Every structure is written in structure tokens, then in C-alpha cells.
Length: 237
Image (tube, rainbow, N blue to C red; front, side):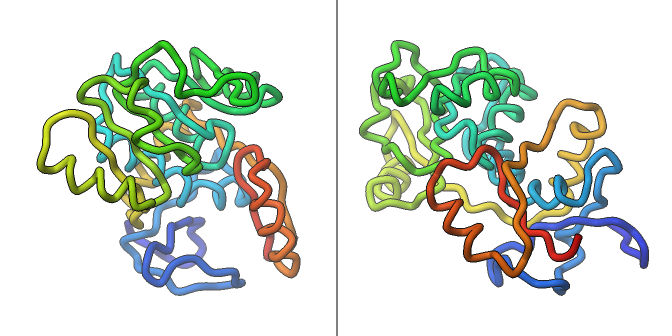
């Protein structure tokens, strides 16, 4: 996209070099997109990594299509809240897995079914899914075998040895597959998501904000695994 002084933009910095905590940063123009007018700066900051992770996992790795059944594990987290909404936009039937206290939120994002993992192991679900997207890396291909269709795919954000082995074998053998997602920076994809934001079809869930000097405290909170949506660092008020 064309970038000029004064334009409000946002971007995923990508890997390498990866993210940073700073007041300013140099970024490749190809990773930049215009910030939707409907989003505040705080909301926009929560989108690039999580939104692109969800989009690329479901569309590119999962090959999502209308009518598919998709289970999102960690449905109330940063990636999960986008995954539920994006899956619904593609016409999928969504089962969200989260704690019972967050079930109402996950349902409001578009999940038709919600499993409270504190009361039921999602791997015992009686519904078989074409895609199981484990946004928090808490499960595994073997645990999800019985809840996937014969040609279904388990996608994780965590490249464990089991997942990586399944990725290799999945390219050689028929049957269930596995995939690992690491979001790539792409300004065009952010523009793709922008349309849904502008049409009111996507919303951003922000748990809380922290001032930049308290980044360590924000990390500590994130590592509890209890955040609802995304945590955002604020450079200046």
C-alpha cells in the first residue's frame, strides 16, 4: 500500500526480526496496512499477529470451506477470539473450547457450541471436526484423533516433536494431517481483515492494557493463560 506522512497504519513485524517493545520501529512497507477507522490504536495493536495467525491457520493450512466443522481450543484467547469469528465468516460450524466463565463471550463471537474444558475433556466430544485449531498448544494430534474426520487436520501454534513428525508423515501418507502456524507478515492480509472490521463482522477483544515500562508484568499476566483476548502495551497515553 502507499504510505505517506500522517497516514494511520498498523503492521505485523514478522519473523525475523520479530516483535519489539519500542516507541518507533522500521518495518517493510509490504507488511503495512491502513488502520481501519473503526478501530482505536489499542484495538489495532491487538490485530496483526493474532488476526493473521488465525486467518493463515484456517484458510491456508486448514483450507477451510463453508459447512466445515471447526473446533477452536483456547477460543477466548488472543488468537482464539479471532479464529472463532474468522471461521464463522468462512461459513464453518464452530465449537469453542474455553473455561465456563468465558462461554458467553465465545458464543457471542459466533461459536455454535461451547465446551467448558474444566468440566469436559474436548477430546471426548462426540462431534467429528474437519479442523481442530489448538491456539494454545494444549492438546496433540494423538489426543484429537477421535474428534477429527478421517481426512481432518490438527493445527497448533506450538511445534512439538509429535506435531512436527505428523506434519512430515502427513505429506507422505493419506488420512489425518497436522500443521503448525507461525504467522507471516503481509499487509495485504490485514487489508483483507479490514473489510470485515469495516462491515462490523469482526471485533477485537482486549483483556487489558499495560504501560510500556511494565512490560514484564504484562508478560507475567500473559503466562498465566487466563487473559481474555489480547494484552496490549501502551507506549504513551
